[in-house]
Image (cartoon, rainbow, N blue to C red; front, side, top):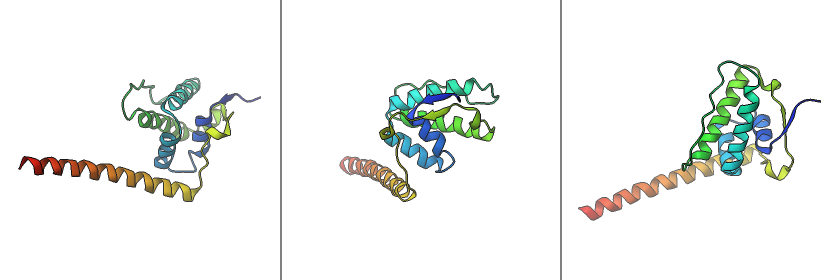
Length: 142
């Protein structure tokens, strides 16, 4: 029997890596999984990848507790995926399976597009609030 590893997040990443864009995949990972789930997945994925003895894989970087830690971990996971894909090593990895399908996001293309638009809108709103805040401070100083 093939080597099997239970990890909902890795099951999702490996199976959707070539189906959706990296930007979309990162947005889903950060929006759906907790920071701890992503960190655990990163530990497992780097450990399994290290067993392949493939040259040129990204180094494991321990991420400290910062505001964007989940995004950085998602970047690390996707960078490793890209490297393994380029080297044709995806088939050498264990099979990642989900024990709880509730922890695997369902992704339809239409939903992804809407999700990406809403993420960008949220980002624009934050930037607009920051600009308005600066303008308000400048108005009070003059």
